[in-house]
Length: 197
Image (tube, rainbow, N blue to C red; front, side, top):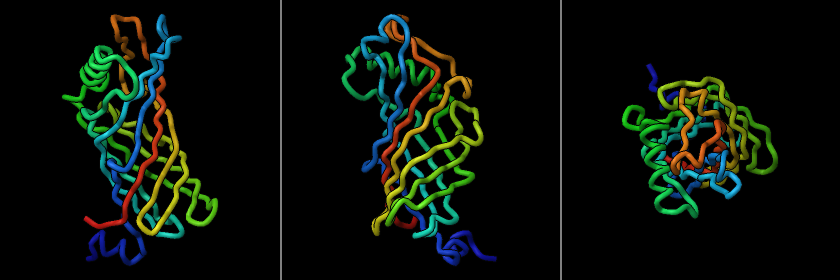
């Protein structure tokens, strides 16, 4: 019986490892209430993640994507006061994500389709399952643009998730003056390099 790797090699699938140190992956939360007009829309950097994309080069046939995020690694980015930053990060880890109980956020694709935009450039639609805060949402859509090169690939785009879909209670920070809305907007510019285990 053939191993999974032998079968992948036979059909020409190539594995690309995600490279967080070369990538940018953020989530934008939106504030409402008293201070929403003052730009208190925190941007959270997703720094510690891993995963792989697989597909047949030149066609994106048989494509798949798996991504794992260390929930404890999320950190406030941008010009936020240190006291607000500490409070937002504490609330995010302890009350929103409950990282001690749910340490990992996982995305696993179930279907990927792509249309060619030009040489080595594709518009991709990725459908998959997101597991966050112990809840799995099926058939989440992510769209983006994928650029292929000899070294690897780069994918850019954005997508939204609603906190309540994952059983997350909406919280407020800064003594209740900043309340966060249900919708979160994720933006990504992710690099993946060709390579084996």
